[in-house]
Amino acid sequence: MTAALFLCGVLLIVVGWNTVVQPMMGLAFLGLALALRPRIGQLNPDLPTLRREDAPALFDLLGGVADRCGVRPPETVQLAAEFSVTVTHYGFSRRRCLVVGLPLWAAYPPQQRVAAVAHALACAAPRNARSRAVVAVALESLAAGSGTVRGNDNAHISWHANPVAFRADDVAAAARNFNIRGKFSEWLLVIPRAAMSATARLLLWLTLPASWSALLEADDAAARTASTEAAVAALNDQDLARPICLEAHRMVIETKALAPRRSTRYPQQDFWENLARHAARLREQRGDDVTRDSPHAVRVARLSGAPRQRAAMTLDEPDLTCIADEFRGPQQTVVDKMMRDGVAEPPQPIALR
Image 1 (cartoon, one colour):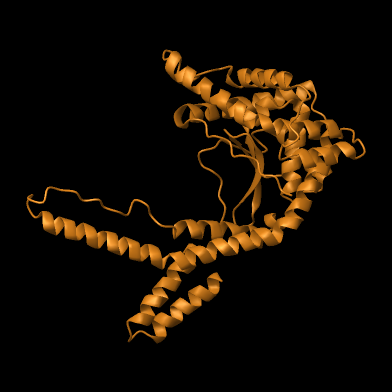
Image 2 (tube, helix red, strand yellow):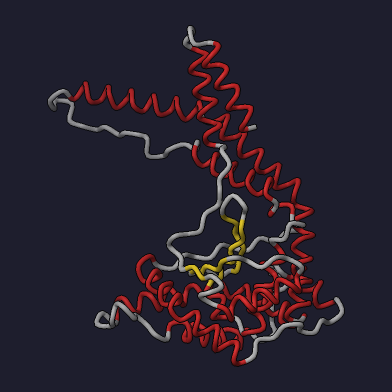
């Protein structure tokens, strides 16, 4: 689609150079092709990045988990202030980066962390249609393209000046002309925006069965790697995302407002320990009463009804200590970023049926 738009735009400009309409249409096609250009993923420059030489214990864990999931290990790890563990791709060769959300890492017990990492690595395997290069790049390009040509709500001028003011009529006429041109441009972008959105929805709908199968296979990989109990507990604890992020937000506000004399270099040394204790309290209050209407209820029931899997990988105390030491510096960087930018509200999980 992008190549066709580009070629049509070039031909319209070259062939119809002596006309007016054809070059204008060619420029419009070139603009659409530019909006739909393939995006090459990049590492987030605002997040701390770890490589094998920075965190050998962490990458030994990731290598073992990847071997048991049948996927290649990630080349880099980035730490974020999100309640999630995901895999992203960057560069022309689509190298893999594991983005570890520190709120989730702090809230989960060690074995559930193994389950979360195994699930993220297995879910991004090539057998998942949405993680393959062509489909993934197409979805990213369509999403970015539809966002590029979306309407601008701020492109409107309201003019209510005194009619006896100097040149008030001229300013009012200019405001009307600006609004007319803005509306005209918005109407022109309706068709390409709708086409991009519809194509993205169609692609998501076509890949939904394969994505659902890959999600279930990732659940099985997490159960094989970390045990069935850890995989089920990790799914159930996804419901802690909102209260954990709210507690992190409260701690950020408390540190900034109630402790102004605290060192800005080390704003709260026990930030993640306090968050882990809060998660343990929430887990105790909830007990075994997990909501049946949870988006993960179908997957939890499926894992619970399957034969029990024992843990193939466990995190012992020396490994936990080594990984904690490797995380200490990047964790402080994430806390500083949270103090500066705040804590984003976690997205609501969606049940795939």
